[in-house]
Image 1 (cartoon, rainbow, N blue to C red):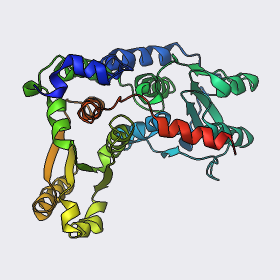
Image 2: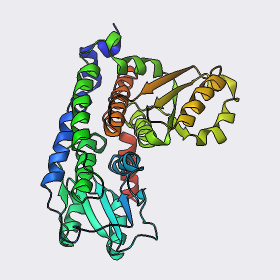
Image 3: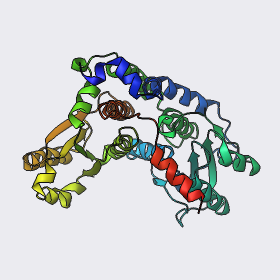
Length: 355
């Protein structure tokens, strides 16, 4: 019996019950929409058209901005950017809409950037489950958008993304996505059943991929359309699976990294390439991916393809993201390590606090 099919073994390794958090993701996404719908927007935000939208945050809180940017890149006429730093770009001013996101509310980089955003007099939306950020926002007469606490930040993506995504629709900054959202929830619910621990290895795509990634270094390739999903996959492999990986995007990869597939030959055999593909990828990008696979095929341990599924871009991106989340979980089980704790991150924060 495969370790990923042994429910008793899974429970013994998954002490913090990450499996339940992943199973709850479809429902969490629906709750995120409701949270966004129920939030009372300030009068200063109504009829406001920003010159740029900036998402400021780190880790699991920041990926929301990247996902939104990928989804609406061909729709909006203003940039949507993500800031992962103590400071903010010089262009931020009163014409900028800034989403300051910290799930815990205590991320030191985000707290620092928040103070700068205030000084620039930008329009601000704060999303958090509590902490110092919520306190600061209230003291500055900014109504924070509160989301449920008590989760590892990376597992709160449903709350974070769909609340922010809903607010952008309420502000008429992006088109209504009601139909696409319903399709996404339906797709995620089906995937929940297909990828759950109860589904045996032979009929569980996430388990099969995890088994192939065991003992390998995943090299993730995707188009710019899936850049955020690729980033999410890499960070989930790091935090959940405790496994190193790398990522790059097409067509940029064809202008440099493709030449790296030469040396050292013995080490390249430890790599396993994972292509993330979408039906909406630019035709020439599809051709580049196909040709690249043929050119590097002899060097890595293997090449895998993971495809999006669904009609809308929202459904396609989240179907692949959810699959990758489950892959990272089962890879943790293969590695016999609890996917939830992130001891090194905790230790790093402790050492920083003692400086």
